[in-house]
Length: 425
Picture 1: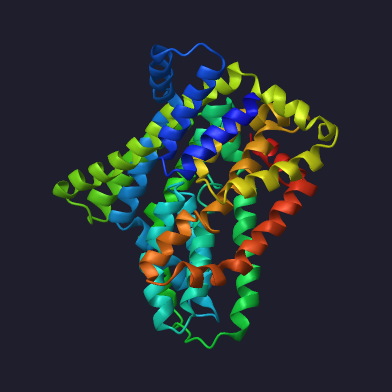
Picture 2: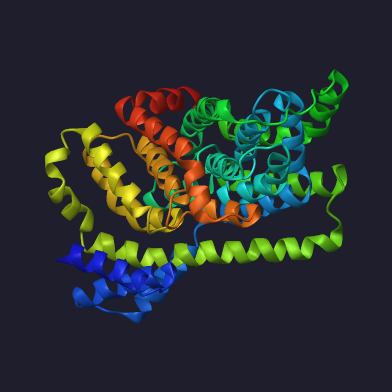
């Protein structure tokens, strides 16, 4: 009965068009009323505790770092570097998109920020060189969702805080699957580019390539600093976010000189608005999360899926299907906040490695960012490319199918994620 009230309240409020943060808060209130101990002070205390969390301080700093990278020319130089190296081969701009997606993912950790930067710079280039715009949009959106997997990743931070999973462990475990996502896109693009009649980019000279490398070296140093600092124990993920923001600020103002002091105010305002949205979601989610724990919903889920507890791979496949279904109606962050606390204890009971489960949870959840109807990332590309969502959806299917194959592979062979993760810890 409690599980029914939780699900019907949450999805009922969402169907009515209520913002997800308020839906989460009122779902917690509905459970309080059902359990007959409603207390407005308890709601306020949980909301305050939801935002007052040290690891979550990484979120605003990574958001600010992403804004500074885009405004300060760091993203532009990453793309220029990729163009100079592979832009001249057949389908080269597609490979540029994939390479730049992986590199940008190691800088900002935000799918929307990376996708917006890639789409703004690459869609006009791909259109001018004869690439089908829907297919180009699909590739850019697919590359954009690598950002939540390769560290630093804001979804990993939120998942780690919500489920008490090691954020550093999630960061290290995300490296190999993120790189495999990029490799999978390479093979998918090689398949779809065969029938395209496109204009080749001129081959960059050796001097141009050296110049692009030198110009982009400041951008390339950031992931080395972050991952090296985390691996060497020099700073925590939260401190890494501060390092990323300060480094991006220094490079944008003093090295590339594309951000002036007056430009900082609108950048800070934009980052603050995004931060406020995410933090309010986290605050409201703790109300429902607290009630989920108090109502013992994880135990009810255990009883419901008990026949699968002895079959971890089968259970992981069932959870994957659930997350894919939820991804059609809910964005990634709310999915983590709502289902993370419910499903993580279930995975632990089945003996599934918590770090592996966290990576798989976020990876499967990211697919909701590129398939309708929610598809936040795909909508960003549609807005930049000025095409319909229907056209972009037709263009994305080869890459979406590639990701589905990868997920099936990770479920069948979890060691692909767990072994490298343990080696780099």
